Amino acid sequence: MRVALVHDWLTGMRGGEKALEQIAALFPGADLFTLVHVPGSVSPALESHPIHTAFIQRLPFVARAYRHYLPLFPAAIERLDLSGFDLVVSCSHCVAKSVIVPPGARHLCYCLTPMRYAWDQFDAYFGPRKVGRLASAALKPVMNRLARWDRDTAHRPNRYLAISQYVARRIRLYYNRQSAIVYPPVDTAAFTPGDPNRREAFVIVSALVPYKRLELAIAAAHAAELPLDIIGDGPERAHLEALAAGARGVRLLGRLGDDAVRQHYRTAIAVLLPGEEDFGLVPVEAQACGRPVVALGHGGATETVIDGETGLLVPDDSVASWAAALRRAAAQRWDAGRIRANAERFGEARFRAEFQAAVDEVLAAPADARW
Image (cartoon, rainbow, N blue to C red):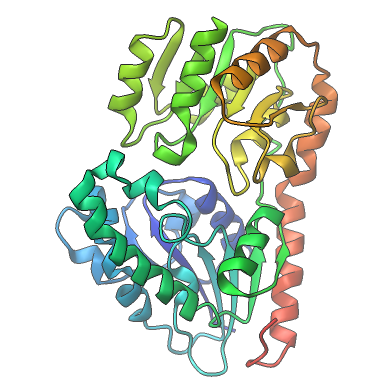
C-alpha cells in the first residue's frame, strides 16, 4: 500500500508538525507532500521522508514570505500529483484537506482547524488595525472567496479527525461534516517536573501572532505587578516589545531551544494561555512539568485544564479578570503530581493507537464512503 502524507507547509516544528511526525512514524515509507518546505526546519524524522512541494516553492522569497501567497494556495494544493497512492492522510489547518486524491484512494484528514483567517478571525489577522484600512478592504473579498472554496471542497476527505471538541464543532459549522476526536500527542517523557518549590515568573511559550492575545497577558502582569517571561518569535514582536517596555517585569526572550523551554516550564509560577486555542500543546507540556496553567476559559483549554486543580480558567478577556487570576495562581498551593497525571492522558502512544484505529476503519470502508 502506497501512502501519501499531506501538510500545508513545512517551515518549523509547531504543534501540527509534531502531530505529523507521529503520523509519519506509522508510515515509515510514506511520501510527504506540502506547499512549501524550508530544508532543515523540521525534525530529522520528517526530513527523512521523500518530500514533494508545489509550485509555491519556486516563488520569490518563499522561505520568509510564503504566507503572502495565500490566494494561490487552493490552486497549488489541487495540482499536487498523488497518482498511484492508495491512502492519503492530510494534516490540515489551511488547504491540505482539499487535496485531490486518485480514484479508489482513501483520504483521512486530521483537521487542526478550519482556516481561522478565512472564517471567524479575519479581523485578528487582516483587520484595519493590523494591515490598514485599504489593505483590509482589498483582502476581504479574497478571504470570502477562500472560505467558499474551503466549504465547497469539504466533501473530499472520507473522514475527518478533529484535535478537540472545539474543532469538531467548527468542522460541523463550516464544513457540515462529523468528526471523531483524537487529541494531539504530547511528549510527556521529555516534559517532566523539576523542583516544585522553585517559582520564578509566569511564562508564555507562543508564536507572536495576533490571535494569541499576548498584549492581554502583558497588561495583566503589569496590573498584578508580577513577572512574566514570553518565549517565542513572530510578526507581532516589535509591537509587543513596545508594550513590554512600559510594563515592569515583562521580558521577551525570543525563540529558545527545547531544553531552555522545558526549564522555564519547570520554574514557572504558572504558564499562561490568554488566547482561544483549538487545542494548545503548551498547556499540556506545562502540566507534564507539574506546573499549573492559567488559560482563557474557552476553546481547547477547557478540555485540557481542570479548573482549580491543574490550573485556572479565566471567564473573560478583561485585564482585571486576568490580573486577579495571576494573583490567585501565585498564592495557591498546587499539587504537581496531580497536574502531571492530567497531562499523561495526552501521551504519544495513546495518539498513535487511536490514529491507527481510525486509519484501519477508513481502509475497511468503501472508497466512496463519507462519514
